[in-house]
Image 1: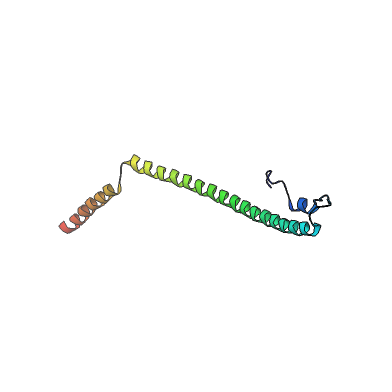
Image 2: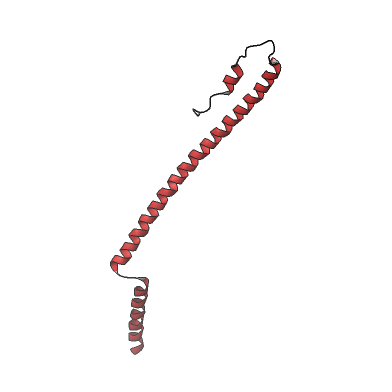
Length: 110
């Protein structure tokens, strides 16, 4: 998981202490170590969940970046094609208006 984490729940569980004449009560030490083991196990579970979520978000982020690049490329292509032809929407509307005047003007004159 992580090289900085030295202890695992198994290492804590299997740890043997030397008993000294004035040492701690073994049962208290075992109870405390049991609590530590539960905490370590929970921390590992939480970290693994976060690692999975992190990976999922990285993949989603990469996908969204790819979509942005594609949309930018499409936009640039559309902008260059409209500027290359030299025809804007205003020009098209003006031409349609002139054609309507011509067509309707002919029909009105006849």
